[in-house]
Length: 68
Image 1 (tube, rainbow, N blue to C red):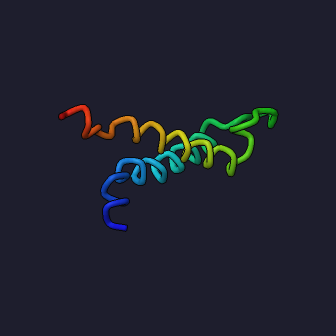
Image 2: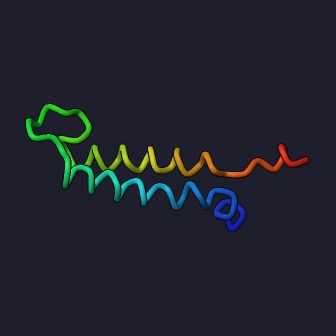
Image 3: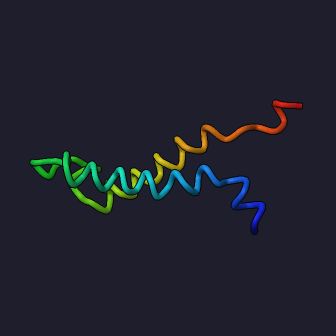
């Protein structure tokens, strides 16, 4: 289990940070009309933010095979 966490640490950090960013985006920017698919609902915005945060942070993971 420890190796899983060590290998995916950036993704694990990115998910809650993205969720927080998604929630804050809904809270302060949001959608006034309620017709926006993602930002009209705090749950949708938080889930979308967590997925995007995990994806963005996982891009910075180093590839061990490229070093060899």
